[in-house]
Length: 120
Image 1 (cartoon, helix red, strand yellow):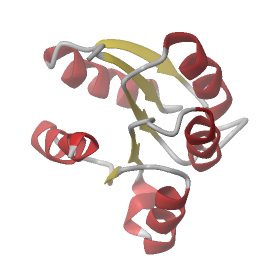
Image 2: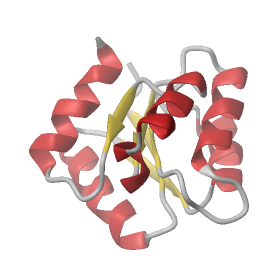
Image 3: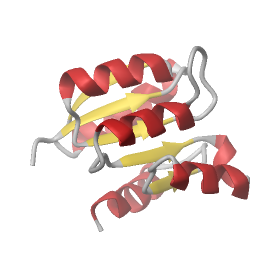
């Protein structure tokens, strides 16, 4: 498996935190700061995993997840957002193709526990 990750969040410090965790796991990490950039980057680098925020400028994460899933039915997307605590957002995330959900803030153990669901 190619260990390429795409980390999508409009907050650079969140992207940096996730990037650090994934690089420790051997991933080459690409970053995007909004959903539109995420869709373009996904098509360019074909990542094996994506972490996606929901509330972002230009295109929100649920729309970006849907476009990515329509483009690649096998996409492994984990939503990382404060919005996950609201059940309707988790439902919409599942409908958009996300396979794992993590509420911010999180620690490395919580991240890896949820991240592992992408492969089960």
